[in-house]
Amino acid sequence: MTEKIRNFVITAHIDHGKSTLADRFLELTETVAKRDFRSQFLDQMDLERERGITIKMQPVRMDYRGKRDGNYLLNLIDTPGHVDFSYEVSRSLAAVEGAILLVDVTQGIQAQTLANLHLAKKQGLKIIGAVNKVDLAFDKDFLFELKQKIAELIGATPEEVLEVSAKTGKGVGGLLEAAVEKIPPPQGNVSGKLRALVFDSSYDPYKGVIAYVRVVDGKIKKNELLKFFATSASTEALEVGVFRPKLSPTGALETGEIGYVATGIKDPSLVRVGDTVFSKIDETTKPLPGYQEPQPVVFVNFYPEDSNKFEVLEVGLKKLKLNDASLYFIKERQEILGQGFRLGFLGTLHLEIVKERLRREYELDPVVTIPTVRYQAVLKTSLSGQADEVVDIFSPNDLPTPDKLLELREPWVSGEIIVPNNYISGVLNLIQFNRGLAGNVSNISEKNVLLNFSMPLSEIILDFYDKLKSVSQGYASLSYQVSDWRKGELVKLDILVAGEKIEAFSRIVPKEKSYSLGKLTIEKLKEILPREVFAVPIQAA
Image (spheres, rainbow, N blue to C red):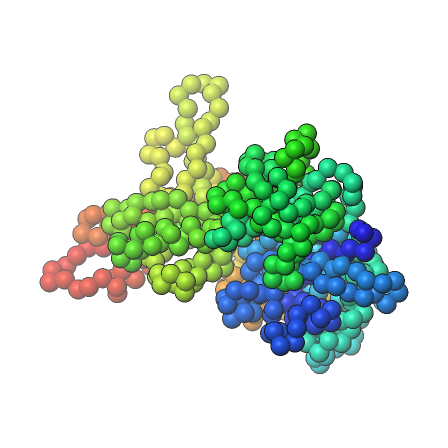
C-alpha cells in the first residue's frame, strides 16, 4: 500500500506562486468540484486570501492516476513563505518525503528560497526544482542561468528543473508526474506497533482537539484507545480521516498516510505538536523524534481600549491560541494602562495577523506597546567561584538595579540578504547603521549577490525590513534566525511627564542611540498630549 503513496510539500519564497500551483494540482486531480472552486483554495483564512500569503500550513489528499502504473494517493502540504512562519515549514517537512522547490522566473532565487531549501536538505527530502511564471515575458538567458543555479543547489541537472506556469497550467501535469516518479514512497512497518507524529492541530468545539498526524508505523482506527507520549494524555479516537481538503472521515489511517484524529480532548495543551501518538494498550512504544517548541522572539503588551473588555480580550486570545501553537501570552499589569497581557510572537507579521484577527473576530482594537525582545541580565554574585545568575528580562521595569547588574545581553541573528549588485552599497550602510556586521558577499547570478550578516534582533523587528526594501527599490529579500546572545551596551530610557516617570513609555535601547530616541519620543509626545494652561515638562532620562 505504501508504494502508492507520495507525501510532499511545495516550498518557496513568499509570492512565488505556491498556492496557485496547489490550485492547479487540485484541478488536475479533480479533488475539488468546479462549482466549489476558488483561487487560493487551501488558504482558509480571509486574511490569507486578502494578503495573498499563506499563514498556516494546509494538508490535502489527492487521488492521481499515474501515466505508467495506476492510481496513487498524493498528500500535499501547502506551506507559508514568510520568514515569520518558518516553524510551520519545518513541521510540515518532517511529515513528508519530498519537496517541490518553486522559484519565480521574474524574481529568481530569494533569501527564503535558500532558507527553506536548507530545511528540506536537513530533513533528507527528495527535492524537485521548478521555475514558475514562464508565461510572463522574461530573459531566456536568465531562465537558463536560473535553472543551472537551482540544479546546483539541489544536486540535479538543468534539464531536470521543470518549467511551469501555475497561472495557465502549463507544465503542471509534468511536474505532478515528476513528483510521483522521483519522490520515494514512505517507509514504515505496516504490521508494527502504532506510531504517529503530530505535526499540527486545530480545535473544534464539538470534537475537541483535532490532531494532524503522519502515521509512521502501524495503523490508527476509529474508537481505538490512544495515548500521547509527552503529556501522557489518553483518549479514544472519535473520528479518523483525511483532508480533501475538508475533513473527510475514513475510519482508519494506514502506514505512510497523512490525516487527522478527532480526540475529544478539550485542553489543547495536552496535544502538543511534535508528540507521538501510540496505542494505549502497548505502552512500551518508543517515541518518534519531535520538534523544538516554537520560541517567541518579539514581545509586546496588549491592553484593552476599555478596561471592561479585559475578559473579552482574554477569551479572544485563548481561542486564537487553540489554532496557533506558537502564540504565547501571560497576564500583565501597568499602573497607567491597567490590566493586560504580555504576548510573544514569531515575528512582526505574526503580531500583525493576531492583531487583525482580534479586530475582525472579536471587535477588539487593543492598545499595543512598542515591540521588544527578550534580554538577559547577568547578576553580580557575592561569593567568589559562584556561577553568575542569568535572568530573563521582558520589560524595562524588570531590570535589576545597577549595583546588582554585571552585564546585559541581547539576542543576535544571523541572516542572508539577496540584492542586486547596484544596491549593495546602500544595504551595507543600512546594516552598519543598525549595529550589524556584514559577512561574506558572493555572486549567485549575473545580477544578484548573497550577503551574509549578523545583527541584534531588536534592530530587525522594528523597521529594518521596510528600510531594506527602500534602499534596494524593493528588490532585496531577507531571511534570518536567532543565533546567539552577546553583551550589549544597553540602557533603560525613561520618559518623565511633569516629573513623574511613565512606565508604559520606558524602553531598553542602545546607549549610542539613547539621546536621539529620547528626543524623538519627546517630540512625538509634545504633538500628542493635550495643551495645558501652564507648562508641563517632558523629559527623557
